[in-house]
Length: 158
Image (cartoon, rainbow, N blue to C red):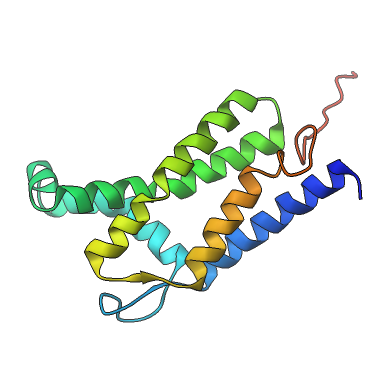
């Protein structure tokens, strides 16, 4: 298998694991009444700041439980940033953006653990599939690829 094929395989496997992590049980524990999927958590955590501020006010967002609220807000941005990074990898023209997004996502990932602790929940299999899938996808270039795994070639002929 060539380096390019290995990179594509790692990229595709990572995306598959990421998607699988979104549809299986993501969290469990006494703070969860039914098994929430990764998509449930992604949606809830992304929209949490806006819903909270709508129901309360901005000052209570920072005074009631600031570490928990900030952690939920930061965790909610992992999926949109990851999808932007995937797009950047696929296009292959913005390697600097890909590197920056990779670092930001790696910094944001531990914030979900703060959410787990403060909400009295624990990660389940979906969380690990989701995390491993993101890491494989983001680092597929370093795991065997010279360029981008799925660069779209555009012909400029008229």
